[in-house]
Image (cartoon, rainbow, N blue to C red; front, side, top):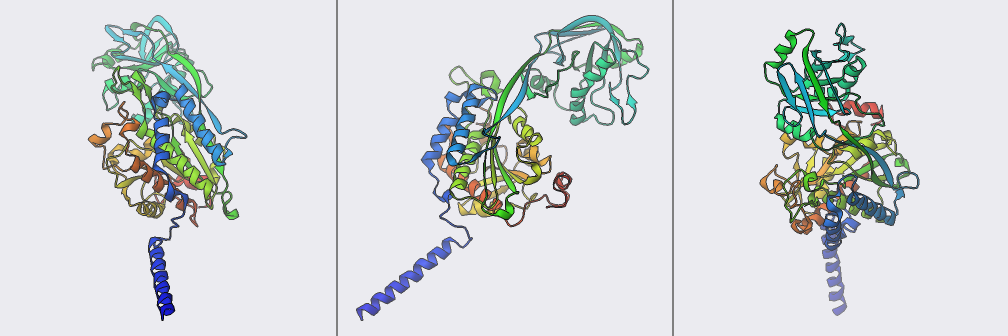
Length: 510
């Protein structure tokens, strides 16, 4: 009788345990995966290092940025990832930093423009001279269409004034295209300087502030403009007065010239092979930028003598730590598809590291089936995560499943007015056709809570909710795993703005 009772008890206990296990795995997710046992203290330790004063804001090209890059490389090496670039974990990224001229002036008849006030010299060497000032419409040449604003116009030895933008496109895109090409057209026709009339629909002060200081871009290896180039903010009387004088107004110009420094930063990456031989050429690339904005005036925000370091805990030590946590979890239990872990530089300077990789991929982009990026301005809702690019690549189910496993909701595309999809490194891959999105901390919009820390010296480790950091890393790692293990590759939904680029990249294979 006693043995029968004991047998019955054990049987019932077994049923109870089985039911509990079945309940825990009702979503089909194995709770023994490494991401379910992340250590909050280990992640907090990484945060206190990457966002420490010691790294001085991790500005691209700085010592702190290099230290962060080497730390990431050491972690990937320790986890067993293969180097991404031959025998190196680094992809050098050549950059060019430019500084605005110390002074500049343009005179045209009775009009005088001064650099830093109503004149902005953006390109070109030191130069000066007296010359006629002439109007050349858009100052544009297009061999394909036959458009040539210099045809029949003698600008040799003269200063050229043009409308902003290019024919048929006076949008921001057209204006920025003019920035890169108009000086060459003017110089080839013999002009000694060229300036466009400012007409963008946002304040001159903002434009001047952004382009009038230190700027960084990819170094193409080509020399900069050979003549001074920039913009003038003129009143309504200037253009009529200029157009009235077909031979131009008597004038002069002077500029102390743009200062150029060529520097080198680096992306950091490693490769982990997958477990499914049928998917060996289907790489998923996981990205996060590890740079931030530096110290003092470099940071672009308010600072004090007591605190002048923009530590970048939320933006983007948060994402970098998530990438490393995922790398470690995948090293312990690999995914079906091979993984590229890539920490990129220069995001704060204009998505430079991701742009360089997308243009110079170390694994062919046609073999790269998805970009899972993590970046953010911060968080004001720790009950969720944000999905920037929801309903565009078919992976929402995997993200929702991963978030729910750690008790988090998914906030789809918060703050749509901010255009966040096109403001982080995922867009560098999307433009090439690779399905991509950003996984970000939970936000309800660009709230006061976000602006309290976004690009501020207050964004330091002491203000981070470390429990949320752990949960975020867990959800990110599991979401990445579920996407990498899908039976089918992700692709852009029909009529997405990047769908055609995807078709061009992959051809018939989707």
